Length: 365
Image 1 (cartoon, one colour):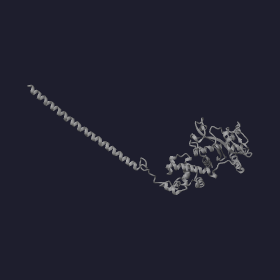
Image 2 (tube, rainbow, N blue to C red; image 1 turned 30 degrees about the horizontal axis):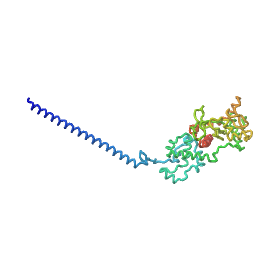
Image 3 (cartoon, rainbow, N blue to C red; image 1 turned 60 degrees about the vertical axis):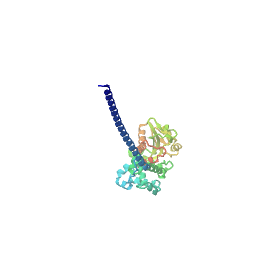
Image 4 (cartoon, rainbow, N blue to C red; image 1 turned 135 degrees about the vertical axis):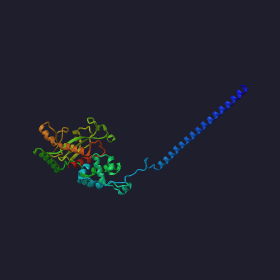
């Protein structure tokens, strides 16, 4: 083949290859442009969706992320609630019978009822103000071991109202003169009645009138509590190593019917029962001889024997009758813990314990 023909054929092949590469390049450019357009559309859609969500959230910014909060369309009716409960269930729920509940409510109604009912009705869309019966019921259920969240659901009130109702009722009991628990050391008639009740209880058990002079059974108990923290000067004094938790020491006395006549919680849990009793106001009165003869208190080995205090004497016969007549305070503590859950770990040292001991006395009546 001549050289001229070979060169012309090579030139044609080169031109054909270059045209093929140009077509391939143009097709790749078109596909890249299409992908960029799809990506831009996707980004635009995401941005638009986020803008719409932000606009919707701005409209309900006072209602929370889940939309406007709904209030219950039903309210709690105390009369309907009481009507549905038989007497046994009522006492099981509130630890008192209906007559005792009505009496207690009558004494506290003025102090626990809502003062401004019109304002309360405006603040609560359904049900209006919280009835005084509901406040007392909430308090009794809480003292019996109920949880704040459960009480809020049962009585259709907020958890804040549960706490307000509870403390309002406790303060009312603390401030009511009829519910004050004070040993009648200056009332000779009351001392005679208390002494006669212990003597009759001993006579019913043993057919004997040999036990005379006792006016109270006394003992100490440690109630479990949370760490008091800054509420006290030295929280470590309230930690009892043998129990493994913080405690509240209570020195209490009761009559033959297990009704509390004295209680003192002013000393740290690490204090000895005898020292805490001797340093209390009533204990100092007895040490000064203000308890008339022949009356005395009945205690265990934690207390010291004195003219006003009888304790075990390591004599089998005497100790048997002595401990038997002291069982009233042990039973009173049992009523207190079982019915009111005082030892459930929620004791608050910033408030007095008067409601616990008063209501425990009501349960023992």
